[in-house]
Length: 166
Image (cartoon, rainbow, N blue to C red):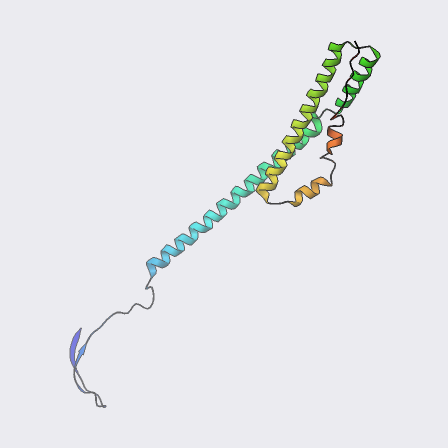
């Protein structure tokens, strides 16, 4: 603030009171700008962490699917149908007793249960992979491959008649 006298060639001449006020044109909101930049950096870090988490989940689900697929292909009992057929024929010819025939049927049921559990595990891991990746074309590609067999190949004797001769 100041007091003075102004002499000018124009009409404005005389005593003057001067008031100096600093008007911040630049850096006015420096604190808010710094906070916004920090928030932007934090959001970028959160985005990177979420992306890394999604990639890790997809890798884990894909590895689990590959493991279940290998387990399904290697542990599946291919000859379970032959076990039942042989037991039925042998029992019909009288070569097996009723107890031995029931053991053959139990072996068939255990094999069907194992095959269905392997198939369910494969489908669950496939669903988990589709869920975390959000990629539904995976199913379409899988249907065109030889890995997922139709129900008739997995359970060919889903209904059968057993005759007992006494």
